[in-house]
Length: 255
Length: 196
Image (cartoon, rainbow over all chains, first blue to last red; front, side, top):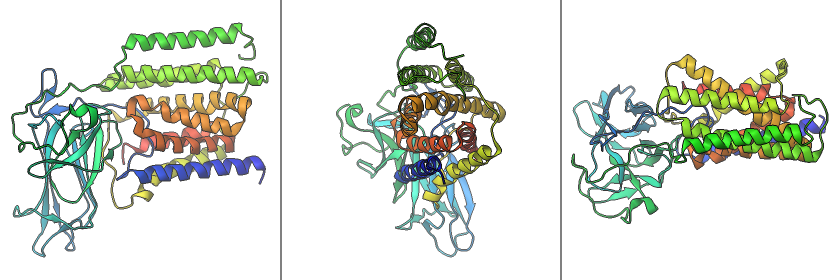
């Protein structure tokens, strides 16, 4: 094999290894790469601030139990991208032999704490009689929540009845999606951390979710605040400089 | 990809700098205009891809008829890219992202974006960097540019994965000498997100 081919093969192998490691850093599968055309609906609030959209949708799915095991569950709300998703591996829930089906519910509610970005989502899995199921201790269940804004300093958190408990969080494929593996279900939200939390702490006490939010969430944005005309000027300037450079600075080797 | 005359290393470095500056400007402009509607996202994406092709053309890049072997390598690379997340996380499906309707328009705009990115990165920029500093530097710089150009739309978390994928696509460019293989692999990976 010629040296150039060996070098190319080594680079391809390095690319595969790097991609493998990058995928391994995520808690759940992502897209093959972050690319393409990004189209996101505005975030929908339970109690929308002025200028924002409302009417977020709940999700409820019934799945039959076969062979005494709960099947793989992947449930999401209908927004694009979904504002709340739950992905559970097969056999993730403890069930008795009498269970014939499970009902997965994702229900939004408004927050009453300024730490929460967007809505609170209650995740439940119950049997056909409405009895809540518990997770198998080693089960892999991932919660994916969308925040109203991109690139927030935030984490997925679970409400333990008194506090928001932050969970190890990764991005879920887009700059406003946050994902976390969980060991129990309940109420989850994207909770602001760091400077964006306005001085509050993640472990501060909050009231139970209620329909009367005290915060005024920001209207969703793209995360880019530079005025468009500045960027247009940048493009025009860059193209102009390049063309001029090419034509007048000895660039005669280009067609 | 062919240039009429050989260029000096200094000219090549200058051309590489200009291409990187143009890429950064166009990527920022796309993010600024992307908006929250399908129409604005499709328009921004289409203009972004077409702009990158135009910039590449100003630097002498021209499309060439791909060889069957390059297309085959591209298909293999694309399937590998699609399979990797499943291989690393075999027990879970991927989180749902976006499925912007209509499918055909989305596919076309995605194809324009992919061809534009590859024409500039693995086409024009790769060639001038190879002339200026060698092929391995070309792989590294184009991979880094590929990762960073997606930050305005997706955030910093894209860098590890897109850097790795960029190296893989750069290796395919090295192996085949053209952009057909990276284009096919890149396009397959992007289009697969509709069904994953």
